Length: 468
Ligand SMILES: Cc1cc2nc3c(=O)[nH]c(=O)nc-3n(C[C@H](O)[C@H](O)[C@H](O)COP(=O)(O)OP(=O)(O)OC[C@H]3O[C@@H](n4cnc5c(N)ncnc54)[C@H](O)[C@@H]3O)c2cc1C
Image (cartoon, rainbow, N blue to C red; front, side):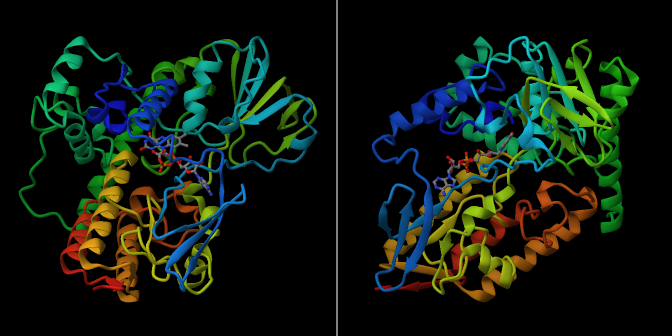
């Protein structure tokens, strides 16, 4: 995701990222600037984990308990706990016997100096694709243990030009407009082919749309999409052949699934890294690493001794463990409610029995685009609208109707099923194939906005208590 469209509040802070894909350090500094500018430091409780949140009907408040012994009351609860926050740890036979240093990527141990060390990295997903080219510059030997290859497309990293620094801020809401243009084209690989002229508004269309003389049937449309999908994947596979010199390594690095099945990645240095003599790809498909001993990783009877082992094994998708901490009107947790009744929400933001609570980017949460900043802004706007509406109505409590959330859940399931052929695979997006259709990611695209607008205009889905 390009930083110009991803980083929030660029106009408000008067900032323009220095690179098309800003570094983690730059993103961190931007977050700190936002916190300073809007006075968040005085309001935030850092290093504090919410352990339980319970709705108290008698006072119409959420009781929020933290790991620091806080017991707070809140009229409204916004759950913005992230979609990929909790590290997913591998359970591998013998991993606890490893004598070297080991850590998960999201808990990087900066006390460990990897310079000139033998390093093993387990996993080749979005995080590993970013890490591998960097650590390969420092370590003595790098063993990359791959279960499934990522699809790695062109990134075209570049510095922001002088012209961009000068011209962009002259356009009112330049970043919001750019984000909106990006949202229009990011529902596939089109974002890549979109050049900066389109994203910066110099030209009106990213690519001319083909007009069909006759109306396509749903089956024909699906077949066309599948054909396009296949062509994209072929290009991604051809790119591996064009870059990676060793044919066996190249073969193993080729993603074999449909585009969008696994999270697509983009990098200019990842594939060339495998041409370095000290970087070794160990293909552990289909089961992944099964054994670790005190010296390192064992695969197919071969031992790979390492000094440092990095687990790039990803994150829990949609943080279901957090939803287990939130208890609604009937004392059941959100997780339990969804498990027992099926995942039913209104727009992904509200769930019956959990009054005055809004889940940002949770299951069934649509809006925006693949750019989460966009989605978060849409969800933020919705919450703002709801609070204003409640103030206008003199309402203190809002809940949603069973029929509205059931109808919306059905729409989510239909949208998921209708587009499933395009993904047709097992990935974290569908909880490794175990998620019921429509219970996690929202696949209805812009329809979310239509449904939201209808609900906001009619107020039909809502039950307001305490209204004047
Ligand atoms: C490797 C990787 C690559 C990604 N790439 C992209 C990308 O290219 N584009 C994109 O749009 N998105 C990407 N994402 C998704 C990314 O998570 C979101 O874009 C964005 O971070 C979501 O912001 P957020 O504020 O909702 O959640 P987060 O940034 O995850 O913040 C959630 C916060 O909630 C806190 N929290 C959670 N539980 C509790 C609790 N019980 N008590 C207190 N605090 C709690 C966490 O500590 C964290 O500070 C990527 C994620 C990962 C892991």
